[in-house]
Amino acid sequence: MLTLYVKTGCPFCAKVKNTVAEFGIEDQIEERNIADEGVVDELLEKGGQKMVPFLVDAEREVSMYESDDIVAYLKEHYAGD
Image 1 (cartoon, rainbow, N blue to C red):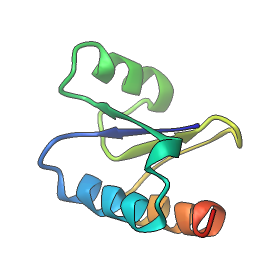
Image 2: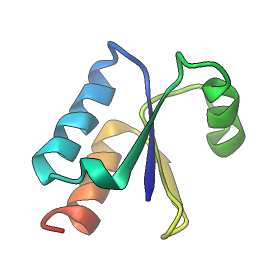
Image 3: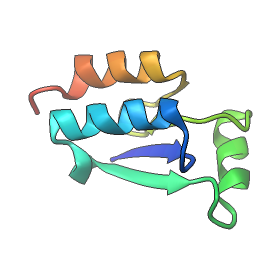
Image 4: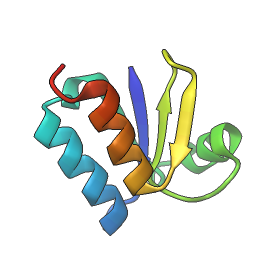
């Protein structure tokens, strides 16, 4: 299961979310909005920065910021799943 930290209205988050939809992997991603209570603290604990998007792939022990990096990662590991 992947966790994607996002913020409503963030164009970089939208880019990643569009990629998720394009690859049809919505069912593999838990989306966490930093506007929800406690999610910012969770994001800071996992990533250390209050920046989105932030992807956590617990299965592969990978976490990353930067929408372009996340899109490339999803393309490499999840496109066509």
